[in-house]
Image (cartoon, rainbow, N blue to C red; front, side, top):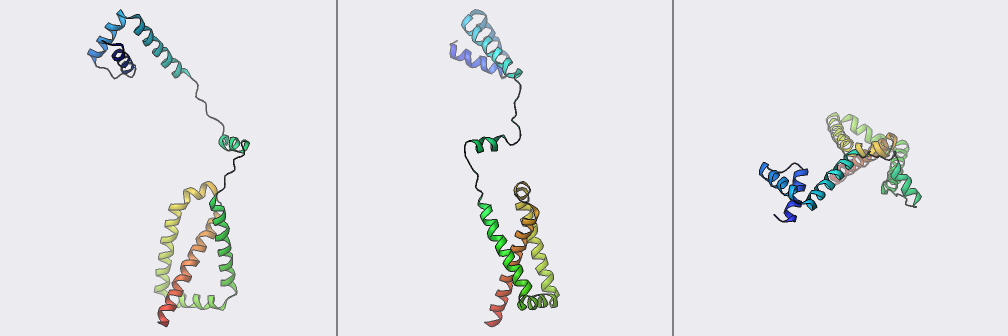
Amino acid sequence: MKHKEIERLIQKSLDRETSAEEERNLHLHLSGCPECQQFYQELVQTGNRLRDLIEFYPRHGFNDRVLRKIGFRRAFAWKRVAAVFTGIWLGTALFLTFSPLSQTIVNKALTSTPAFVRLLDKIELVITSLSHTLLPFVKSSWNFTFVGGLIFSIFLIYFFSRMIKREVQCKV
Protein backbone atom coordinates (compact mmCIF):
# COMPACT_ATOMS: atom_id res chain seq x y z
CA MET A 1 0.00 0.00 0.00
CA LYS A 2 1.05 3.55 -0.63
CA HIS A 3 1.73 5.89 2.29
CA LYS A 4 -1.09 8.27 1.26
CA GLU A 5 -3.56 5.39 1.52
CA ILE A 6 -2.15 4.44 4.92
CA GLU A 7 -2.45 8.03 6.16
CA ARG A 8 -6.09 7.99 5.06
CA LEU A 9 -6.62 4.66 6.84
CA ILE A 10 -4.95 6.01 9.99
CA GLN A 11 -7.31 8.95 10.04
CA LYS A 12 -10.31 6.68 9.39
CA SER A 13 -9.13 4.39 12.20
CA LEU A 14 -8.82 7.26 14.67
CA ASP A 15 -12.35 8.38 13.70
CA ARG A 16 -13.49 4.75 14.16
CA GLU A 17 -14.75 4.50 10.60
CA THR A 18 -12.72 1.51 9.37
CA SER A 19 -13.93 -1.97 8.59
CA ALA A 20 -12.30 -5.03 10.14
CA GLU A 21 -10.33 -5.71 6.94
CA GLU A 22 -9.07 -2.12 6.71
CA GLU A 23 -8.04 -2.22 10.37
CA ARG A 24 -6.14 -5.48 9.81
CA ASN A 25 -4.34 -4.05 6.73
CA LEU A 26 -3.47 -0.88 8.67
CA HIS A 27 -1.92 -2.73 11.64
CA LEU A 28 -0.09 -5.07 9.29
CA HIS A 29 1.49 -2.08 7.54
CA LEU A 30 2.21 -0.26 10.82
CA SER A 31 4.09 -3.27 12.19
CA GLY A 32 6.50 -3.13 9.24
CA CYS A 33 6.80 0.66 8.64
CA PRO A 34 8.36 2.77 11.42
CA GLU A 35 7.59 6.05 9.59
CA CYS A 36 3.83 5.36 9.45
CA GLN A 37 3.93 4.00 13.01
CA GLN A 38 5.46 7.30 14.21
CA PHE A 39 2.80 9.27 12.29
CA TYR A 40 0.07 7.13 13.90
CA GLN A 41 1.51 7.64 17.40
CA GLU A 42 1.80 11.41 16.87
CA LEU A 43 -1.87 11.61 15.81
CA VAL A 44 -2.97 9.53 18.82
CA GLN A 45 -0.97 11.76 21.19
CA THR A 46 -2.36 14.92 19.56
CA GLY A 47 -5.91 13.61 19.94
CA ASN A 48 -5.31 12.77 23.61
CA ARG A 49 -3.86 16.20 24.31
CA LEU A 50 -6.77 17.92 22.60
CA ARG A 51 -9.26 15.96 24.73
CA ASP A 52 -7.37 16.99 27.89
CA LEU A 53 -7.50 20.72 27.12
CA ILE A 54 -9.52 22.90 29.45
CA GLU A 55 -12.33 24.73 27.72
CA PHE A 56 -12.13 28.48 28.05
CA TYR A 57 -15.15 30.73 27.91
CA PRO A 58 -14.66 34.48 28.20
CA ARG A 59 -16.72 36.45 30.71
CA HIS A 60 -20.01 38.04 29.75
CA GLY A 61 -19.55 41.23 27.74
CA PHE A 62 -16.14 40.25 26.38
CA ASN A 63 -16.99 41.17 22.79
CA ASP A 64 -18.39 44.55 23.82
CA ARG A 65 -15.26 45.37 25.84
CA VAL A 66 -12.95 44.44 22.96
CA LEU A 67 -14.99 46.45 20.46
CA ARG A 68 -14.97 49.45 22.81
CA LYS A 69 -11.17 49.21 23.22
CA ILE A 70 -10.60 49.25 19.46
CA GLY A 71 -13.00 52.17 19.04
CA PHE A 72 -15.87 50.37 17.33
CA ARG A 73 -19.30 51.73 18.21
CA ARG A 74 -22.50 49.99 17.35
CA ALA A 75 -25.13 52.21 15.88
CA PHE A 76 -28.58 50.71 15.83
CA ALA A 77 -30.95 51.98 13.19
CA TRP A 78 -33.75 51.19 15.62
CA LYS A 79 -32.75 54.11 17.82
CA ARG A 80 -33.63 56.51 15.02
CA VAL A 81 -36.84 54.62 14.28
CA ALA A 82 -37.65 54.70 17.99
CA ALA A 83 -37.35 58.48 18.04
CA VAL A 84 -39.69 58.77 15.06
CA PHE A 85 -42.28 56.42 16.56
CA THR A 86 -42.06 58.20 19.90
CA GLY A 87 -42.72 61.53 18.16
CA ILE A 88 -45.65 60.03 16.26
CA TRP A 89 -47.02 58.53 19.44
CA LEU A 90 -46.70 61.78 21.35
CA GLY A 91 -48.26 63.82 18.56
CA THR A 92 -51.16 61.39 18.23
CA ALA A 93 -51.73 61.32 21.97
CA LEU A 94 -51.82 65.12 22.06
CA PHE A 95 -54.13 65.21 19.05
CA LEU A 96 -56.52 62.72 20.64
CA THR A 97 -56.46 64.61 23.92
CA PHE A 98 -57.17 68.10 22.60
CA SER A 99 -59.06 67.52 19.36
CA PRO A 100 -62.87 67.47 19.18
CA LEU A 101 -62.49 65.04 16.28
CA SER A 102 -61.24 62.36 18.65
CA GLN A 103 -64.45 62.45 20.66
CA THR A 104 -66.46 62.11 17.45
CA ILE A 105 -64.37 59.15 16.39
CA VAL A 106 -64.74 57.46 19.78
CA ASN A 107 -68.50 58.08 19.75
CA LYS A 108 -68.82 56.54 16.28
CA ALA A 109 -66.78 53.54 17.34
CA LEU A 110 -68.75 53.01 20.54
CA THR A 111 -72.15 53.38 18.87
CA SER A 112 -71.37 50.79 16.24
CA THR A 113 -70.56 47.83 18.49
CA PRO A 114 -70.06 45.23 15.71
CA ALA A 115 -67.55 47.49 13.99
CA PHE A 116 -65.82 48.10 17.30
CA VAL A 117 -65.63 44.34 17.99
CA ARG A 118 -64.16 43.73 14.53
CA LEU A 119 -61.68 46.52 15.17
CA LEU A 120 -60.69 44.92 18.48
CA ASP A 121 -60.20 41.58 16.72
CA LYS A 122 -57.93 43.24 14.17
CA ILE A 123 -56.05 45.02 16.93
CA GLU A 124 -55.58 41.73 18.77
CA LEU A 125 -54.28 40.14 15.56
CA VAL A 126 -51.83 43.00 15.01
CA ILE A 127 -50.62 42.93 18.62
CA THR A 128 -50.25 39.14 18.60
CA SER A 129 -48.31 39.27 15.33
CA LEU A 130 -46.09 42.04 16.65
CA SER A 131 -45.47 40.25 19.91
CA HIS A 132 -44.43 37.05 18.14
CA THR A 133 -42.22 38.96 15.76
CA LEU A 134 -40.69 41.58 18.05
CA LEU A 135 -40.67 39.91 21.47
CA PRO A 136 -37.30 38.10 21.14
CA PHE A 137 -35.71 41.33 19.90
CA VAL A 138 -37.52 43.46 22.46
CA LYS A 139 -36.41 41.35 25.41
CA SER A 140 -32.80 41.86 24.49
CA SER A 141 -32.68 45.56 23.70
CA TRP A 142 -35.76 47.68 24.60
CA ASN A 143 -37.90 48.23 27.62
CA PHE A 144 -41.61 47.46 27.58
CA THR A 145 -42.68 51.10 27.90
CA PHE A 146 -41.23 51.84 24.51
CA VAL A 147 -42.78 48.70 23.03
CA GLY A 148 -46.16 49.78 24.38
CA GLY A 149 -45.67 53.16 22.70
CA LEU A 150 -44.68 51.44 19.47
CA ILE A 151 -47.76 49.22 19.50
CA PHE A 152 -49.96 52.18 20.40
CA SER A 153 -48.48 54.17 17.49
CA ILE A 154 -49.14 51.37 15.05
CA PHE A 155 -52.67 51.03 16.39
CA LEU A 156 -53.33 54.75 15.99
CA ILE A 157 -51.92 54.84 12.48
CA TYR A 158 -54.12 51.88 11.56
CA PHE A 159 -57.16 53.39 13.29
CA PHE A 160 -56.83 56.77 11.58
CA SER A 161 -56.19 55.21 8.18
CA ARG A 162 -59.39 53.18 8.52
CA MET A 163 -61.38 56.24 9.60
CA ILE A 164 -60.01 58.35 6.74
CA LYS A 165 -60.78 55.55 4.31
CA ARG A 166 -64.41 55.46 5.55
CA GLU A 167 -64.72 59.24 5.25
CA VAL A 168 -63.41 59.12 1.67
CA GLN A 169 -65.82 56.32 0.80
CA CYS A 170 -68.75 58.27 2.24
CA LYS A 171 -67.93 61.43 0.25
CA VAL A 172 -67.63 59.56 -3.01
